[in-house]
Amino acid sequence: MVTIITGEKDSGKTTFFAYWYNEVRRGSGFYTKKIYEGNRLHGYEVVCLPDKRVLPFITVVQTQRVYESGRIATEQRVADVSVLTDVAVRLRECLEAPDEPVWIDEVGRPELDGRGIDGWIRRILRECTDVRLVVRKELLRRVIGHYGIERFNLVYV
Image (cartoon, rainbow, N blue to C red; front, side):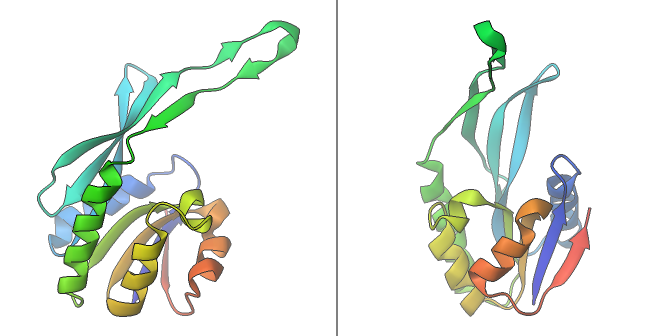
């Protein structure tokens, strides 16, 4: 069965996801954790499951800047794509135990464009029996269509 956790941006989807994993303590996968410096978003880390190994992933390199003529540049992010190699190792482990829960946080635009971990998600949806995904509400229909998910449980946070 596929379970999709969805909600608006900053609604607590990943917090719920991590809480649920800590209650179940079964399966493999990952989630992303926001890193703050004071009240400012500094970046994201990937937390691997089940061992909770933390990998620096995305860094915010520029906060909002106002230019002449009323133009504004918003934050820019730099991702360490080598982290995807570690994520792939976790997802490969999921395929070795297809009846255990698979935990995948933040399926988003890269996957919808065929990048990121799109291929792994396709394979896991074919081969694993208990898949838990986090998807932002605005992308929910596109993700369901992209992966051809016909039956799923929906948790709205």
